[in-house]
Length: 337
Ligand code: UFG
Image (tube, rainbow, N blue to C red; front, side, top):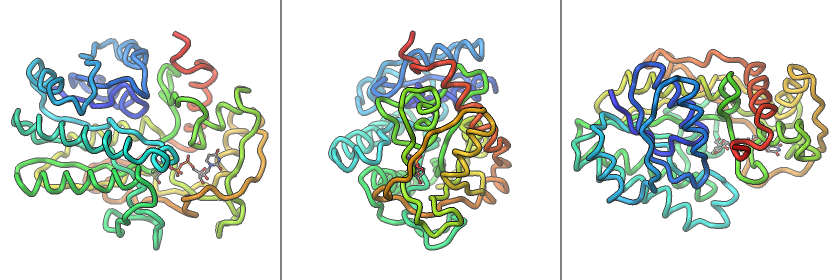
């Protein structure tokens, strides 16, 4: 089997490429490197001892995608490509709508032209918005979204549903990620944010390595046991394996799965785990709430376990250990090469 990974040089894409290659699947990556590095692809090849077919391509470039499909018989696509910074999406909504939607439309058009109907899409727990109840199951209500990034995920889920409605033979799998963290245990690939990180784990690792002075904890007055927000952090290697399981169980229709651990950790619990496991102090201050954050968000992982046979195997201790291992081995991310 040969699988096209759009955005395959990125954080989740590169880890998924490793799992696919190690399972004997051929990998083609189309990535414009706007928020990723070719070094990630080289390191995927180094980890696996296998080669990847790489295209420097903007996935909204239909002509370029046609070339990719003409030069490679693609059996399935995993669609990672997309912008993902919540705050930036509020400041630059058109950039987000154009990029995230146009890439998807081009991709589906070219898939149609080539008779390829199997797609796995990187969606997000953000489609659940501010949950009425937790844990979140795939049947929990989907909300309109509090920011343009979230709305693009919701819109793409709708586009994919309509794509399948027009041709019931197509196989659409929607994976709603919770909070991906950690890195490959080799320390060769990991999360490499541009500029100051928005997300908790890369912020913590950059404080730990001395690039940032202290962590601001956004909100200590939430209705949670320690007052800080609770999230379902999932190790990126487990998440990558979830994509493998999704490909193996791909079936006609629109099939939606949450990929999370089913367990919630507060911000303070994550920071404490990082300090305990890695023996590093994280200077921190309590700060006001961040706009748009929900108090508690964690998954029910029952459907993925029952249908895909997938469940997260790695613990919070594994997540903080591997996140730190990546950071200390690559203090400047891929930029050092
Ligand atoms: N946090 C801090 N300080 C920081 C960064 C984050 O206290 O410097 C807190 C946040 O307030 C939140 C928690 O850490 O309570 C997790 O924040 P992240 O930014 O790491 O993750 P989010 O849950 O906000 O967002 C993630 C993804 C989004 C996705 C969303 C879906 O980044 O892409 O989950 O739930 F949409």
